[in-house]
Length: 231
Image (cartoon, rainbow, N blue to C red):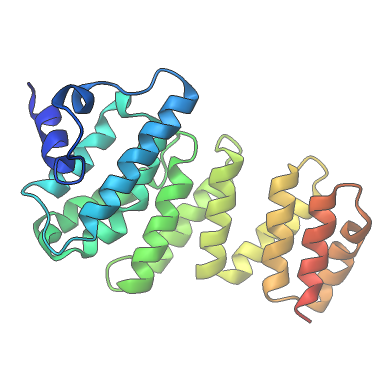
């Protein structure tokens, strides 16, 4: 039994009393549905572990190591990244905090779909609790990097725009306007752009938003109406 498999057993044994060693060692998914179920199971177990006052030895090290195991699947990798702010703040992870932070900065521009956006949202949550740890300018720069590159998934670019909006609204509003005037922009990007502009609605943006009130797509009509609803 290798160290990664042993660590997985140690990680979850306290919460999975009925699980056998074989089940923990086995790659649990062969279809998309099974991957979702497996990731959800691990997510629930990890939440229970992180809620405890004490973590098992080398928990943080092994939790991060799972990000390097491709067989764990991208859904579980996303769940891991979503929890790294909680892990960073846990007293038992004090010795691994720099390693956790380094990994977050590494993954926040990852080319793997959904990873960059997920990681940037985690960094934003960590900054809200520890502004001394996450530099706002650096995070805003990473967000802008993802937004400007169409090779990233729509999900990543949406998350990055939300992060940029929280850190630098004027810059995020510029991107939002550009997405609305470009006919080729995907609908999800346009709905997010309308939401961003609606946060701090400016008179100059009204002519840009107005046409979407009569757009054939319900999502865009709704987003445009919501943008005006805060007046």
